[in-house]
Length: 359
Image (cartoon, rainbow, N blue to C red; front, side, top):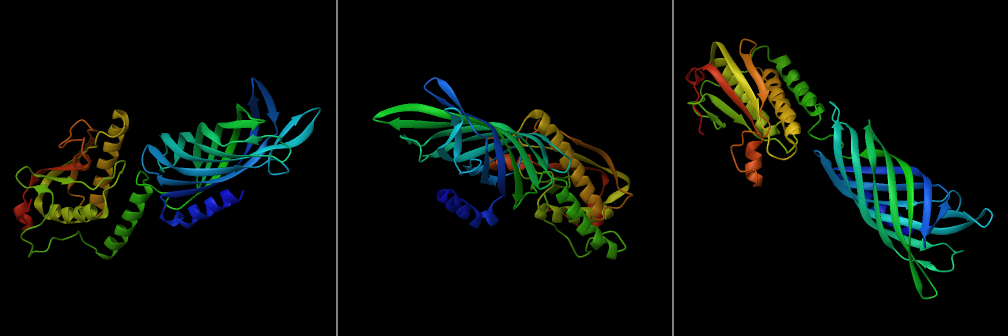
């Protein structure tokens, strides 16, 4: 138990820097001890532990965790045999790496259904009533889970190797269990897949626009501007998306503000903007298609919130998924360039805005 407390203290001390930190408790309803070809029923018991997720963005999340398995009374797994006599069999402290694959994600960014996997090593200690000794062994687990507000609910199957040594002989025993876990999520639990990020940013901009009772204006003295735009092709490219990000970063959003002001002057009456979202090759085709459309919709929404006049209409807002890369998806730089939203302008005259693009 002291080993687990020390481990949790270290993890808690660095939780502020973690992507996400989870404190969990639960109960193993069914325990079974397999030894030399026969099984021994074990009493159910409480479980407590914690997990530190280094990366909770995207379809796959991963981290490290540890648990301590309590018995109902003595803090040990309890075995029942010999007419119902109880004795402390062993204590188990699994330390493991964990991975999570998100299958269904809600509009609010919560993971409605995900698959859990664990693999690690269990520190096994024999109870006082056991004649021999239990050695440490490998630990694996798998199950399903869901997020409800700041909480997680999980169902888990576990299998733990418990090599038993007595009088110079060794038997490769193991335990298996089925249980439930309830956890609370701390730290950075909002990822960039969540529309909440968009709402927060848009709300701030609405407050600014509220005090400026007119569209964003381009300074008249501006003669050149550093944007990823091409006047000859009448288009701009917005980058700055994370792998599963639905909105661009702050730098690219500042560019969107500038673009909104330029278009208010440069777009001729009746002109339109066509918005096309794109992704890199990370993820499935279906997921990337949906993500590209969400990126396009969010960029269109931000342009309007940043002051784009209602007289400037949107033509089509669509996504192409990963089907139209402009760079190599085998490199990090190439994937970054492919995660983009393209703006194509109809009936636009940038000279009216007194600007020219450096790029």
